[in-house]
Length: 267
Length: 160
Image (cartoon, rainbow over all chains, first blue to last red; front, side, top):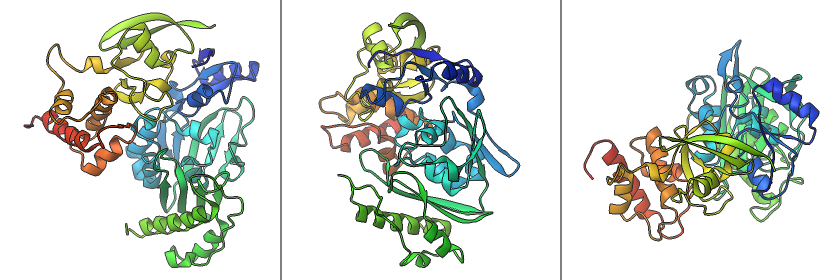
C-alpha cells in the first residue's frame, strides 16, 4: 500500500469538521472500493477519515412507514437483519448478493451509494424504491441523487448518514452477476410504490437509471408480457470486454422479467 | 510518514505495535507478528488467501488497514488448532485432500469457518456461494467442497 494518513473519527460531526478543513481528504467506511483504488493509485487523498466503526451510523429501524438504514450498515447486516427482511425482503436479498461473503462483512450501504459504481447493486434499490438519502446537510431524493458514472449530488464534505426507504407494496430485484467480480452485468429492481410502479436498472448504463417506458407498460399490471416490445434506449449502455450494448440491453429485459416472476411468486 | 500505535488482539493475545498508517492488516500479521500462515495471493481482494476473522467475521486482510482493526479481535489460521489437535476444519481439509499446493488453504479454512458459523449445514449450492470470495487454482474445488461438508459434520458433532 502507498503512504497515507489515517484519521479515526470519533463522530460524524468530527469527520465532517475534518473534511471541511481538509478538502482533499476522503471518507473511509468499509474500504472495499477505496482501498483497492488507493493500491491502484487511482486516488491519492491527503487523509483517510475512518467512519466505518461509528455506531451512530449502524442503526436499522422502521419508523413512520419507512425503513431507515444507517450509512455504516454492512451488506451482511442488511442481508440478515430481521427488520429489513420483514420490511423490504428484496432489499435484504439484494444485499446478500453483493460481492462475496468477505466483502459483505466490510462493505457498507453508504459507501456503495456514495461511490455510485455503475455496476453496484444498491443504487438500483435506492432509485427503485424512491428512497431518500439523508446527509449531514440535507435530504436528497433518489431521483436527484444519482448523476451518472461515479457521480452523485453529494457536495464536498457532505456525509451520508442514512438511507430512508418508503415501504413498497411489493418489490423484487434480479441480477445477472459478472461471474468473476460479482458485480451486476445488469440488475433490475422493480417496486410497486405509493407513487406507482418504478423500474430501476443498474450495471447496463453509465449509472443506475429508471426505465420509464417499462414503468408505463407495467402500470396496468405487473405482467412479464407487458414488457414485450417496450422501448429501451441502449445507445449509452456500457460496451466493453464483458458484454456489448445489445447483450446488456437483452439482459435488462430478461432481468426485468425475472424480477416480475419473483413478484408473482414464480421462480 | 504517519505512524500510529495499534493494539490488536490476535488469537487471544494483545499485540501493540507502532506502525505506518498504510500498514495493511495482513502485513501487520505477517511482518510485525511473523504469523505467516495468512497468505497474500492477489493483493486485490479477489482470491481470499488472506482471509482472517475480525470480531468474528471473515474479511480479506489485504483490504483492511491495521489501523481499522485497532482494538479488534482477530483470529488467523494459527489460532485454529488447539496445541497439537487440528481444528475439525483443518482435519477435514487434510482427510479430504481439499488442496493441492496449499497456498489458498489458510484462506479457504477461514472462509469455511465463517460460512459454517452462519450456516452449519450448507447445501452444495450454499457452499459454492459461501466460498465465492476464495480462489483455488489447483483443485477444481471438488475436494474443497467435500472438506467443507465433512467440516460441517464434524462441527455438528457427527462422524467424518
